[in-house]
Image (cartoon, rainbow, N blue to C red):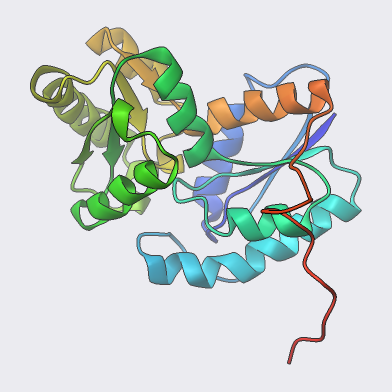
Length: 235
């Protein structure tokens, strides 16, 4: 099967990081392509960034549909443009945030999200509510790092995750930790081993879900919420 993973920001470094983390865990029969747009924000750290990232991301979604791919993964823990991508796609589109939130709810009574920037805490809280997972939600904790730093400084990032995740377990009752940024792809095994708590890597979870969805012949229903938009001209 062919799967395209789209990093919606323009960071080549982060795109390479995601590719390097996913290649060892993909199935042997999965042809994996990891790409990013050449226009848009270098990192996504606000609703403003998300809005600018969506149009070039949708161009890549169309290319995947035209290029014989079987599924798409949006590798940003905001799932920018996820609903629009599903509307214009005939193949399944998996958002790493949505996928990992639901997976976390299956693995423990309560989960906590590690987000890079403190200002994004309210957005993550709202996104949990939109997914209908309030009952499983323990907290969002900030690493006080930029998205770029989660990619470029893995040692510091892992240390901050371990500090905040330990607090989430002890003070918030978390049983599962979600690494809330694609820049932390590949960090979960080491953190889980050191903290002895379940840690979710959203990019990895989304890739394996994409493979399973393709195997099952499933995709998004097109009769309502993800219905194909009517054709029209855009100025």
